[in-house]
Image 1 (tube, rainbow, N blue to C red):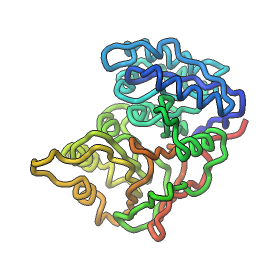
Image 2: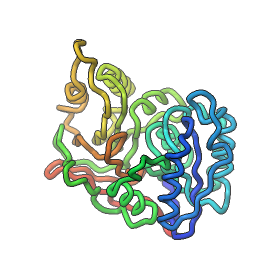
Image 3: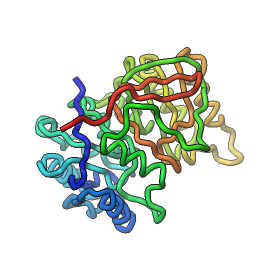
Length: 311
């Protein structure tokens, strides 16, 4: 049975943790200020500003910091400072027999996909694929901020996924499907195949996004998912932003569109493109583990249950 976490109320405490890459202090301070303006209190993990090359400190230290925040009875939500790389390295040092005794909202995307997959596998916990604490000078943006705040406070979902006015969904394959939403960053999904935390797509709606991957690398990862039966088992597909994924100029290559069409066109399973989530301008919150219905006539994503519970 899936588990949900109570919605946040004004005055609740958000812990900002760094499970992945080394943190940019100024960008993090901007995000903390936004959460405070929304009426929440914020505390930083003890090791948020630690660094070890591209990591936010040693694996055991990050895991301990995460565990402290997760088991703190005063904390209601954990928001990742940023992505990058490192969450997967932390997984062996998390004691899920301890973590599953507590319920918190978990927010993040990109490299945080490793945690989304693990927390669903270990405790069937609904988590939020959405904006993280580091923010640029412009803040979260009107769309991103509004959707995140609504998800945290239980104002949405259930209901239709709101789309930016200039960002309609496109149809790659027609159909209609309903199932629990799973997925996240394609690189992390592929990297966890064969591990304890590999994704289960049976009867699910699979969401994918990525950044900085050439079309042949996207092809390779999708081929891996296909050979592992993950595309066959899914009921439908949502394709988010694939940012900076163009081929090298002057080099022979399939386009990203051709790669996606190869794997998702002609399957008889609905597939929607341009879902506003991932590394692009728009970063909608996608509650993972929540039942979603996708239709293609008209193109629409509708969540049929809430992402958070009541106290």
